[in-house]
Image (cartoon, rainbow, N blue to C red; front, side):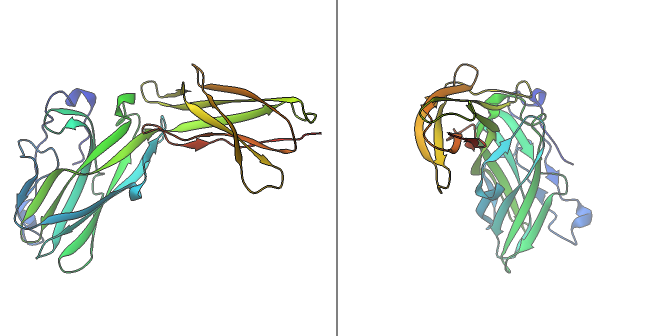
Length: 277
């Protein structure tokens, strides 16, 4: 059964029932406790036997970026080894400082969302699929930033390993950036005003809001050129708005570029072409 923790369930130590492989499945696999992350009373980093988790990759190594409403599909690849081969593995994402006492965000893999591919007689890579819903899983902006990954793996002989932290990933608030240069057209040497806005997803309100006091670069590419150059760096105002002026010199493209932070991804606006006469 897929379990999703809500805010109400995240007070104090999170207690969830341990998942057990039914005895009826004994012919197909080991009849041993399947220690899902955060199982009730399960000790931290429990190991029984010689099963090992050797590699965990979250979302292909990329940050996970969420807006305000659209769900996102990601995966966690768990490579594990055991002398008798791997029976199963799974993972969960959690936010907080301590799995026992301080968790304020928790995301489990989709029901039936784990598939295992045999690498060789001792090793398999199990891929757990997740559906991250910003309206359900990311109920507050405090959840932006570093998340930890718990995982377990079970060998065909019943050995297992269950670790609180095997990897980490960043879950970020999606960003948007705009650019508008005016007037258009403009005479050479005249003052061109370049405005824009830097906004990002607000998970508290499920809307986008200005990202304030952030450094943003204004870049320019002359018509026919192959690359942009940075003209200046400005700071977004108290509402995320951007505004600066430059002297028009030749036909070309203007754009704003934001480098990003740990909680918000980098973003480059669509360029605005200016005809200089």
